[in-house]
Structures are given as structure tokens and as C-alpha cells.
Image (cartoon, rainbow, N blue to C red; front, side, top):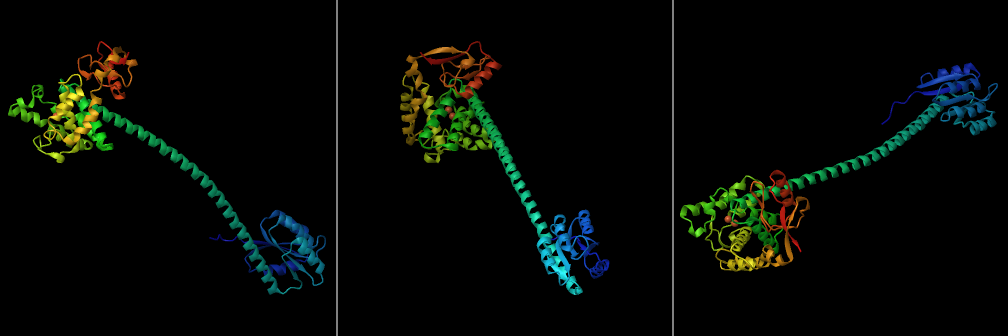
Length: 437
Ligand SMILES: [Fe+2]
Ligand SMILES: [Fe+2]
């Protein structure tokens, strides 16, 4: 890319005006701006007044300041200009002096050949233009380098700013996701509480089934989303019982008439339907639907058998059976409940799960018996409640709604729920927990 070149200024200095006029005539057609002066002093004055001369032509023999001295002094005022000395044949030493002191580019002997003089001036002007263009381009490159450097620094700054902004957004998003997850778990917990309220006689049945199912599933190597699906399905497996009269729910199935049995058996499908609108919970719905299928195909609602029953449903069915059996047990609850499950292996329950349930069941029903002797019950105020404490009595709200059943271990969510309920509908006493003597 080239910019249009400005017209080059040329200064001609000679004490003979006819020489200056001859030069003006010769250079009339050239694209340059010719200035003249009739002495070295006058020439220096022009250079002081106007900047940007590209070529200075000077006669050697002038009164006062001679040509080589003038050219020498002109270097201070126009350092980049090229210089030409006009001299006679005999002025060899003046010519050498002009070249050395005055930095003369060429010398031309008088009388000159017009064509040769014009060509010399053209060459000088072209050379000056090239040098000036080279300097201009160097300056452009320097400036662009500066700009690039600055731009790079700004870019680095902007990248840093944006990285920080992205990190902050990420943290915010993480916080929001965490909140959503906590809310989601709280809602699942609330649903599960509703199921337990509905079937009042079965204390923390849903939570026991969930604990047994999750521990058994873990033993089987199930993890991640699949484990979470089993946990939620276990917590909500009887959600379809909501709305079924309690009179039917407390009857043993073999004493129900056909109508009662049909209504009871509907709870598997009703449970699946209840959460079907929540797309993320559909895999949970499937496990709920099949939690009463029997291993031999005589269960409901779809009479699936063996491994056609989803593994999660078989696990929940096993856990459900154990927890129902545990209600009638005392002493070694785990051992007795497992013995009862043993009677229906292969018919109701998947026999391949017996091993893992033998491992995990004792952890769910551990506890009260073995530790009773070393623990005592205390009433604890809300501010002293801590995660990990074991409830020794059911917690009811002031208006008599069961909030948590005894035997459950407090975690962060339960603590928050208790505190909130005590604010909204406080009972007349604090919370009873077991502590070591
Ligand atoms: Fe059920
Ligand atoms: Fe159940």
C-alpha cells in the first residue's frame, strides 16, 4: 500500500541569478517544488523557514560562504536531504571538501550538460523519495508493532477478565444447581413423608426400604444415576397408596374381597402415574410400577417374572418384604425379618438377592437393641440439635402431624425441616434423642 508522495522540495543556491533562472527553466516540467537563494546565508534562512527539503543544490564559488561550507551547515537543518555541488573543473579540492564536510551526494561540473543535470536531479529526487518512503514504512511498522503490543496486553487482560467472569458464573451456576438439588431432595422427602403419614402404622417404612435398597444396590455394584433412581423409587414406592382408604391398607391382602384387592393392587400403577408428569422421574415410575411383581410371575400389575422384572424393582420388593416383616419382630429384628424373607425366596423374592440383604439388613435395624445399654435419652433444644443424633421419640408438630419417626438419624435436611416446623407450628416440648452415657 503506497500513499501519494508529497511534492519534493528542492533548494538551489547560486550567487548568479541567471544560473538560478536556467535551473528553473530546466526543472519546470519536473514534479518538484523549487526554491532558490542567492547566497549560503540566504539558503540557510530558507531551510530554517521551511522544512522537508529533499534535495539541496549549491554552487561552490560564492562570495562569503562557499558551497562546501553551506552544504556542511545545511546538514544540521535538513539532515535527510541529498546534496549536489556545482563546481568548475579545477575545483577538485573543493569537491572533495564538499563530499567530506557537506555530505554531497553528487557533484556536477559547470558548464553542465542540461540532459545530464536533469537526469542527476531526477535520480537524486527518486533516491530521496525511496529513502523517505522507507523511513515512512519503518515508522508504520514501528507504530503497528506498538499497537500490536498494546493490543496483546489488552487481549491478555480481556482474556483474564473473561476467565474470571466465566469462573464466577460457573460458581453461581454450581450454587443454583446445588440449591435445585437440595429442593428436589426436600420435595422427594416431603412426598415420602406423605406416604408414611398415609400408612400411619408403618413407621418410617419408606425410609427403611430406601436404606435397605440403597445398601443392597451398592453391594451389587450399582452406582450413580441408577443408584439414585433406586433410592427415590424406594422412598416413593407406595406413593400410589395415597387416596386408598386406610381400612384397606391395613388389611392383609389375603383377607380382602375382590374389589378391595383390585383397589389395593392399583397402587403400583397409581404410583407410577403420580410422578409420570415429571420426565426425570419416569425411570423411578417404572421401578414403582413393578415393586409387587413376584419372582414366579404371580405378582401384579403385569405378572412379570424372574429377570424380566427390573432389578431395581426386585431389590425394592425384597427390602419392602423385610421391613414389613420387621414390624412383627422384636429382639434380633434383622435376623428374624431375613428368616421370614427366606420362606418366599424364588416365589415372591429373587433368591439371588438373599446374600446381599443378609449383609446389609443388620445396619438398618442395628441399633436400638445393642446400644441401649450404653445410651440414654435426653431432651435437646433446637439450637443444640446436631447431625448424626438418633431420635428416641417421634416428632409431631404442634397440631399433631407426624414429622419424623423415632429411630431416624438426623442429617442436614432433617435438621432444617425440624427447625422450620418448630417455627411454624411448635409442639410443647423439645426434641428427644439418644446420647451416650
Ligand atoms: Fe407397595
Ligand atoms: Fe411398601
